[in-house]
Image 1 (cartoon, rainbow, N blue to C red):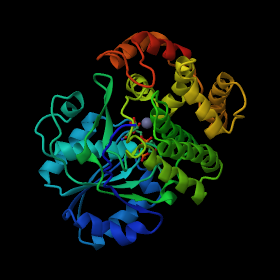
Image 2 (image 1 turned 135 degrees about the vertical axis):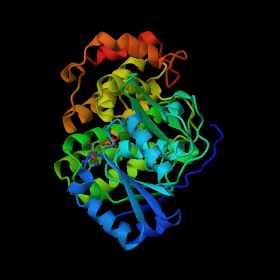
Image 3 (image 1 turned 90 degrees about the horizontal axis):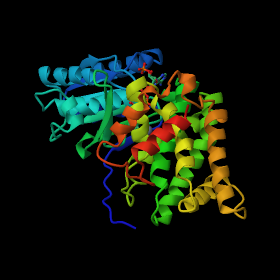
Image 4 (image 1 turned 120 degrees about the vertical axis):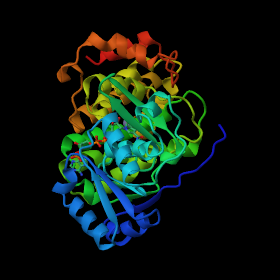
Length: 389
Ligand code: NZQ
Ligand code: ZN
């Protein structure tokens, strides 16, 4: 077990009718000039935009807007936001949307205090030293960006998708109203759920002894996603299902479960290359990759963790042979992702062939083998990509 620091300072308002009572008060703690950032318009369709605008106008808050943040958000959009923050002397950014909108605002917030291209933060050319405060209203349960300190940005010119983590990027306040996710499509609900699950799997699978309390907590989170994602897909306005997914998404990645585990993640860096090259939905890429990664790393050395996963998460008979349980656990995961969530189960269906696999794997391993549950070389990663075809 490792030593760790626990510091998760995001204040959360969970449930309906919280915006009406608390949004303006929270924003005003930071100032009166707000930059409202959102995506392609889903917040207008569900009436959330009107609700926010009337609330802010009634409180005499000055609102500036930036819409059109793309899924897999582009650094060019981040630059636009940073520019508005500087020009208008914005006090606080209000991000309304899914992970893409929230991630983009994180680098706008830092860009407010930087003269160059915000992409510099992602490539390590500039350090994040200061950032505007961020308040979020989450509309899609998936990334956990509403309560974590990281963000991922895409540069379409260089075909790169890179992430950065810094504690000052963590939102100050997040409004999590599960009813705002009723309109999320079956497909995005499935992708978001696969993403939540992956955030837990990335941490849960480790080769050293971990804390029982955290493993048990993660198993509970995984069971929550497996139970409620199919319900949210068939009954989009099932509050219990949407609420469970929403709170699970935040806790999967807000830092709590990672406290005693510091190894690098495996499937995420491999997936980010897929999104960078083919602009696919992050959760879909993870769904396709994760079972293949599992098959690649399963061996007599790693079987114990798979056994634990199979018995505790999928209720597989603990008296069976360990390797049999391990293999069954991967089959159960595949059945969840590809049957229950109805996600595509291979890259060929997405018209992706092997032409960039070498380059993508080279990028993942540019600083040496990918250190994780099991270290992966460039060739390992090419094999995993090929297994996804
Ligand atoms: O743009 P709008 O019109 O809002 O539509 C969005 C978008 O098309 C739509 N949507 C969102 N809320 C909706 C809705 N549609 C109907 N009703 C609603 N209530 O859903 C589409 C996808 O949105 P997006 O924000 O892209 O999805 P997600 O939340 O999955 O975010 C994905 C991005 O986050 C990054 C991913 O790589 C990807 O770029 N990640 C961020 C992480 C973090 N900050 O810690 C960790 C993750 O591992 C991930 O890498
Ligand atoms: Zn993710």
